[in-house]
Image 1 (cartoon, rainbow, N blue to C red):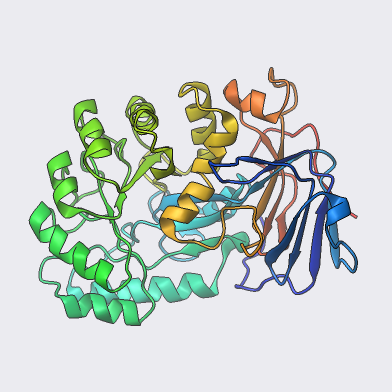
Image 2: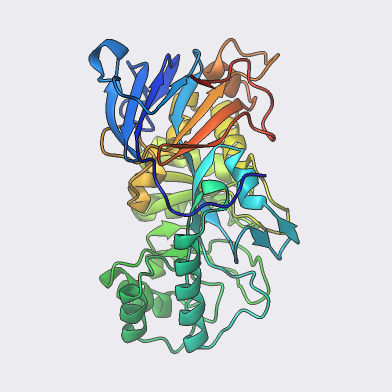
Length: 396
């Protein structure tokens, strides 16, 4: 297991060379004509062909040896508690395992699995601020966990959201997991959160944990949260007619998760494509959950949506990187100058029926992860969880 890390960044110059396939994370240009990336102080400073990049004076050189480079994967929907432990599954090291699945950033949808989670307003705010502070200072395996997502409860007023924002809280946990379940009541609090720079997510579908409730399309539309959380259910999905209504009835982000209904997820993807609004689709796992922890969950979602959803693999990777970064207002998720140097190196898994990485994903196979870099620092070499890649990068 990788050691826990603080929020440190690369202090020298990183050069990545001999990239065989450069995935940008951007739907508008998913594959870059580039084989080299340069990063300094943890941020990308150059992307292009080796002859056009300043590669002199490198502190670390990674030879990709022809494998693919993608932005680090982003899990838009997780439920951390403290450290790298989940009481829901009694498991230690689950976040480090996600690192081995190419995930470099996680976004909390609420620290709801904490035993004895406080429901009073003072306790709700205290837990959120504590979680935000703790994960800002602690990165399991180096993974960035954006946490501190309070679940709103009845009785909260605007000053509570102003206090949370002033303390550094930027997220709301899933609306509907607490006592606030009515659309009109939720809308008022979502608006207060938005006013103070806090992004909101709403639970969609059937109940998932004790205290949560059934949230239908009318409630989701009325609440007007920024993210339609697990539109394919967590676990139980809404009828497809309501999912279509949500896709067509608002312009908010459409989140499809691993721990949901696969038919509903594929349908949501189709509805978004039919509207030419693929940029709204983002991916999460909604883990840890009753169905467990899925270290390869984001890669599995990419393969599912590409193979059964008939989405080109290079676009499917965008849903797990650039789309999420843009919808979530993050500084990672794209291979472009100025972004965080968060990368995952992948190649076709050994003995895959696919002819190359993208073809293998289109055929439903998971890629092999050969290395993961966060803020310019190598955090993981050959993955212990993914199938073995045909080629892996090397530090030279």
